[in-house]
Amino acid sequence: MVDPTPPDETMMDLALDLAAAAAEASEIPVGAVVFKGDRVVGTGGNRREVDDDPTAHAEIVALREAGRTLGRWRLDDCTLVVTLEPCPMCAGALVNARIGRLVYGIKDPKAGAAGTLYNIPTDTRLNHRMPVTAGIREDDCLSLLQSFFKRRREAGRT
Image (cartoon, rainbow, N blue to C red; front, side, top):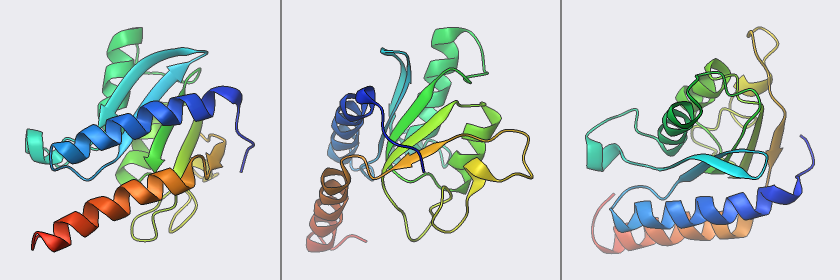
């Protein structure tokens, strides 16, 4: 794991706002931000329900926007900040995008692929690896997810 940089907290604030907006749309509250230097180049919240798209995870949405913003798919000079540890699909997308660095809030014991169940971002068998920083605004990220699922259970939804 790599130590956080000063923009990590600021970008996580934005990711938390995106996650909260996703929750308001009845999406699992995950938010992601891609930044280069101090410039935000892509943002995303989960959109699977809204778009009827199983690949519309926050990270994928943010990577797509970053590619369009920068006019390229290689994002090796960018950092992705996300509230929840990426799943295997998203971690694979980060490798394929050649993202420069990954920062996340909380571990995902059910699908985490950046150190919990798998370690795709640092797998030496792959053609790209990236440093990973975990635990940024961990309490806030966890609270957002827990309150979302508590509300769903109380409403009789799983």
